[in-house]
Image 1 (tube, rainbow, N blue to C red):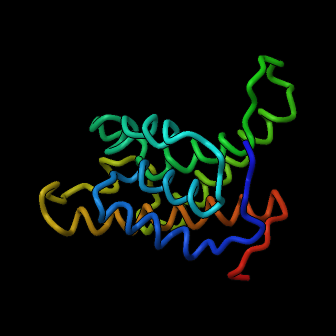
Image 2: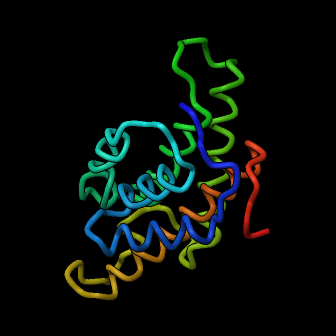
Length: 161
């Protein structure tokens, strides 16, 4: 995968992810599309399509938040491996460490100290605006952190700081 961007604004990645959600994508898809676009990745649209099933806590199961699922998928796209080199492989260890960082940061910064979709949306009507607006905000929050991590780890200029 080639990365065309030499500088990225994590704030713009967050805004784009939010707008992608408002435009018709679910959380995971919205985040993946924003990351692919802002980092100018030469990947097929299939990476967005494969994230479709991760929305609403993995296929509406209410498990892990779809935005966090998308963030983990995005980090795997940048830092993951394609060869079965065992558990000591530095690439897989790095991808797992960065995913763990994202998980812990998201849980601590989403206002509900949770990563489970059903916990994050407890008491909210799925059809009501409150639920949708919260999910849009969580998608942007997670997209921001993914972009921040990628910029830091790959020495891509962070336009926001």
